[in-house]
Image 1 (cartoon, each protein chain N blue to C red):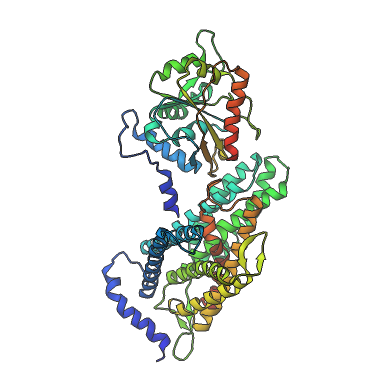
Image 2 (tube, chains in turn yellow, red):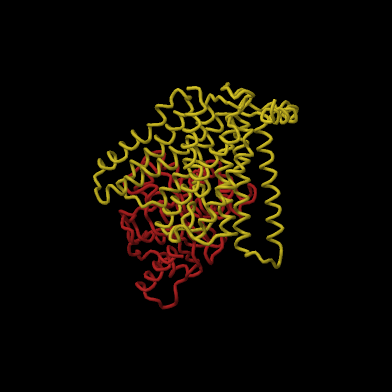
Length: 354
Length: 223
């Protein structure tokens, strides 16, 4: 028996009394996932305390704005992790509702910053109150609706929006306006809905002693979803940190002045390392987990750059509020939005019993 | 992150359930719904929430303006503030009439203005020595992005009651939430900015004052 199976067994031994003590725990969670979530929450709490101490120092070499930014980020991550963990505790429905609400809120921020005209009003109403809930209802109905929820917005939503706008009779900048609504719907609702869709995958694994494919019975897809969120977010922060440490060559100064090639490569490499270390919550082996986290990190980078470009075009620093400086939901989830569908497809293609 | 947003909806002046004598559950719910619907972030720029008698004057772009501006005030001030709204709109149908009653609207007939019962006199009589007012000096909602000219009502309020603080308010993006002629709202985020109070200077001509007041509201857009 090699270490790859014995470590989860040890983890299970430690966590089993803990798991039995909480009757709320649904089949969504297994001991490995609980441990990972607890560790991440604890680390964030420590980082939060560290940030508070740093903020109280009268004289440091670190710029106070950096400290403030760090503190607000850590607080947001802690809140994000706590909310996701709580949703996992309450089960699949709660998780879907959480992601649905986040999508709705992100779409709200996206459309707020996108100039629309009076003629788009009715189309927007349908986007908010029909297509957004519909997408999550289709995901909720289960994995047999994969065919339906993967085309509902890209095909039917795509066709509906321009038709409804055309009926209202305003042709000014028509293509531009409809494309913006379609993009908002795809980025904030469609792509994000693939994250909770991970929960329904029936996975198999070749983490067995002889390398044969077996159903992944002791695993939890909630753990996989948490893995996705964690890797995407750490990709963000590690790229930022490496960029601060070594950054010289800025990738696109007009889009984001803090994203450098050094930060990109350093961040991707260290994120991949973290992903590799976390192989035990996933159905992946070491190298499979490394590849997956590499893909998540690269997609997360692509997401952040894309959303930054939109923000620059609109002349704002953050989504969220119209004027005030604090970041919105969309600023926090941009990397997850881009990584979720790709991670879902790769996992489904290579690891799911379809 | 959602918690943070919910938290920011609370206001520092709102402590407990004191001051609910003239407020009931329905109007509290109405205020919460109004805030969630408009997602309004509220800014007080060189101005603090206060229970002294004030006239809030704002740009008018949506039927929701009165309701949202009213619900963005801290509760203690909300109970003392009466939005002036169009009688012909808010008296149509049971639901609208009920809502208007709940947010304590003062319905003014803008179609039949009688010489001896001018709206300004009516408003000043209604507010007495305790209440504040919310008015929209443009008269009717404008569809253009630029604000319309102010009607003279604000000038006469300032002239007859020089003790009232005139607070400019800029309502941003609400016209996209519920534009003219639509009945279904789209829940975009809006922003309400309160500016520093102004008063009518002694001997200031009407046109100059109205222009200055309009400029005060317009300037809040840029800050």
